[in-house]
Length: 600
Image 1 (cartoon, rainbow, N blue to C red):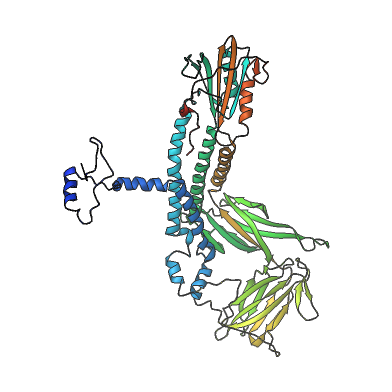
Image 2 (cartoon, rainbow, N blue to C red):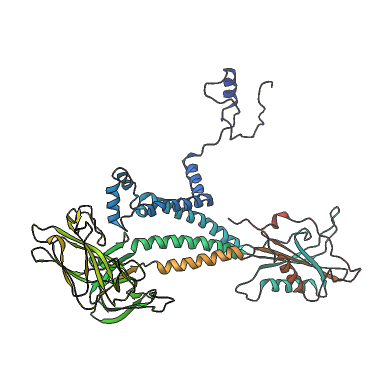
C-alpha cells in the first residue's frame, strides 16, 4: 500500500481525471506524461453546450446582471445628450461633421448621431428586458405555489421566539382556538389578514428532561404574501413600462409649426416646420384636419411690482375636420387642444412683422411675414431675413436685426424695448450682402444668418449701418442694394404650436401607478407568522401565542398581544394571581417550520 492512494470501493469521484487504476499505476511508473496532471488531481466537470447555455441564462436573469444592464443603459444614453442627433436636429449633425471631419466619420459609423436607434443601445435595452422577464417568471411560479401551500405547522416551543405571551382562560381549548383564528382571519373573508390553519395535537409522553404535554389545539397563521406579490407587481410594471415606452417611441410622432394670425396649416408632414416620428409611423395615418389662427391675445402686468410679467396667453383657432365641419377652439399654456388623440400645445409666441425687400433693379425679391423670436421679458425679438432671389447680376441680401414692440431711443442713439405690447413698434436692421450659402445643399437654420461669406454694410465712420423702420416706412438699403419696407397697421402675431401623438401614454401612466403600488406593498407590508396553542391541564385552559417576523417589525409584539386578547375570558400570566399554574413545557421544536421562506 506504500505510495498508493487509498480509494474506497463503490464511491465514484467525479472530480478526478477519470483514469482507471491500471492507467494511473502505469502513469505513475512512467513518471507521468508530459502535460498530464498527476493522478488524483481535482478536475472541474465539463459543462458541455447545454450546461454553458444554462449557466449563461442563469447569469443573465440574475439580479446582479439586471442592475448592471440598467446602469449600462444609463451610461449608453449619455452620448445622446452629448452629440447632436439626426432625428432631433439634422442640421446640427451636418454642422458637427463639417467641424470635426476626422472623428465624425467613426462616430457616425458607431451610431453616435442616432444613439437611441443604434444596434448597441437596442441590444442593451433588449437584454435588460429579457433579464427582467427571466427573473420574474420563475419567481411568479414559485409564488403561485407558495400561495396554495398551508401555513407552516406549529413549532413545539414558543418561549424561544422574540414575541411570546401566555395566559389562562375560562373557555375550553376549542373556543380559544376558534376565537384566535377568527381574529387572525380578519373581518373580510374575501381578503383575510392571515392565512389560517387550525389543527389538533396529540398528547406526547415525557422525553428526557422534557416533560409530557397533553393534547392541544393549535392555530398556524401567516401573512405577508402580498409583500412578494407587490414585489412581483413592481417588476412586472417595470417590464410593462419598458415595453410601453419602446412601442411609443416606434409609433409616436411630433411636429412643430409657426403660424401667424390669419394663416394656418394642415396636419401633413410637409406642412410642419419640423417633424419627427418613430420607425413604425405611417404618414398616411395622420388625420387630415387643418387649423387657422384667428387671433392671439396676451396680457402683461402694468403695476410696478410685477411690471411686464405675463398674465395670460390665448390662441383662438378654427379647426376644420376632414368632413368639413369647423369649430372654434382656444389653446392656452398648459391647456392643450386635443384633436383625434393628438395634443396641440402652445409653446411660444411673438411678433411677425411683414417685410418687403426690393433689389437694385426695383424688383420685389422678398415679401412676407418674418417671425422674430423674443429674447427677454419685454419681447426684444431677434429675426433674420434672407433674400436670395434677387435679379441677375445683383448680390444676395441678408438682413439681421431686432423688433422692439415698445421702443425707446436712448441718448447714445441705441434703441431698446420697455414693454411687451406693440404700443410704439420699431424695427432695427443690419444689412449684409454676398453669398448666403443657400445653394450649397447644406440645411440652414432660418433664424440664423451665416455671415462668414457676407460683407456688412458700413457707414462713413466704419460702423455697421443700422436701419430704423416704423410701421409703414420704406427706406433705401445701403450700397445701392434696393429698398426695404415695413407694412403699416397692427403688427401680426405668431404662435409656435407643438403637436404630439404618443399612443403609449395611457399605458405608461398605468404601469407607473402599478409600479408605485407594488413598490409600496413590497416595502411596507409586514411578513409575519403567528402560532397559538391551547390545552387543558389540571382543569385550567392554557393559551400560548408566539410570533415571528422577517426582519425588524415593531408591530409584532402588538400583533401577538391582540391575538391573545381575542380569546374570551383570557387572563395573562402577568395578571394571574400568585400560585397560578404555569403552562406546561413543550418538547423541542421542529426547526424546519419556523423561518419564513426566502424571497427571491
